[in-house]
Length: 296
Ligand SMILES: Nc1ncnc2c1ncn2[C@@H]1O[C@H](COP(=O)(O)OP(=O)(O)OP(=O)(O)O)[C@@H](O)[C@H]1O
Image (cartoon, rainbow, N blue to C red; front, side, top):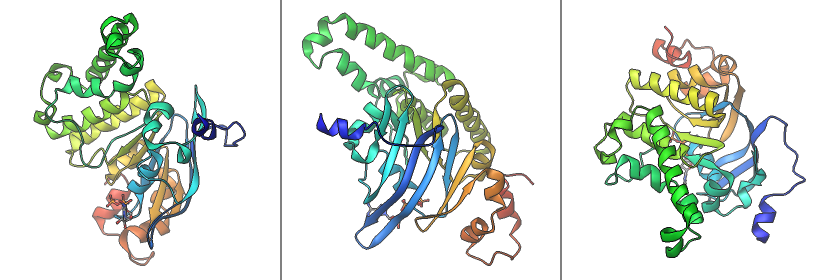
C-alpha cells in the first residue's frame, strides 16, 4: 500500500498533453551506460517512434518503462486518463501492465505457441478474470461477476481478432500461424489488457511490404479509434516515417534528435549516426530512400 501511494503522487508536474514523460533516464549495466540522461515526451493519442542504430539502447528504454529493468536514475511518469499519475520507476514491474495499463510486444515473438489463438488472448486477460473470481475456486464456480467477466474477455478477444482478420483462425494453434499473423496476434494480445500506452518492439521485423502496409493501417487505427498512445521501436523506415507523429533518435544511449519525421529525416546528425560517415557525404540511394520512408 505504501508502495502504491509512492507510485501515484499528486504533486508531479508534466506537460498537459503528455501521456508518458521520460526524464533523465539513465540505465547502467556495470561499466556500460546503455541509456544516458534521456528525456522525451510521448503525447496522448500520438505515435512516438524511437529509432537508432543497433545497440543504441531502444529496447533498454522499453525494458525500463515496462518494469523489466529498474532504471539507475530517472523519472518515468505515465499520465493515465482515468487513473491519474503513475511513477513507473517506483512500481513493482509486474504491476505496470495491470495497474498503469502499459502493454508491450517483444522483438522476438513471445506467444504461447501451443495454445490456440483465442487462448492466447484470454490468458492476456488473466488479471481481470482472477479479480472477478475474488481469487478463489468458489468465485470461479459461483460468482455471477466471474461469468460476465469471462463473457467480456471472449468478446474483447473476438473484437481484436476481427480487427486484424484472424477471427477465422481463432482455434488454430498460435505457433502454426504464418509469421505475419503471429506478429498481429501479439498486438491483439497487448490490446486485450486495454492499454493506454502500447509499446511495440520492432513489429514490422520479418514482414513483407504488403504486411508492413497492413501494420501501418492497424497502428493508425489503434491510435485513431482506440485513442491509445503508441511507442514504437522500428528499423523499417517505411513504417516509421509513414505513421509516426514524433520521432526520438538514440545513438550510444544518448538522444541525438527529437522532432517530426520531416525534421528527423533531414537532420545531419541522424544521417551521420546511421552511416558513421561525414555529414556532407552523399547518401547511398537505398539509405536515402529508407530515411525518406521508402519513397523513390
Ligand atoms: N541486461 C543487460 N546486461 C548488460 N548489457 C545490456 C543488457 N541489456 C542491454 N545491454 C546493452 O545495452 C546496450 C543497448 O542495448 P539495446 O538492446 O537496448 O539496444 P537496441 O537499440 O535495442 O539494439 P537493437 O536495435 O539491436 O535491438 C547494448 O550495448 C547491450 O549490449
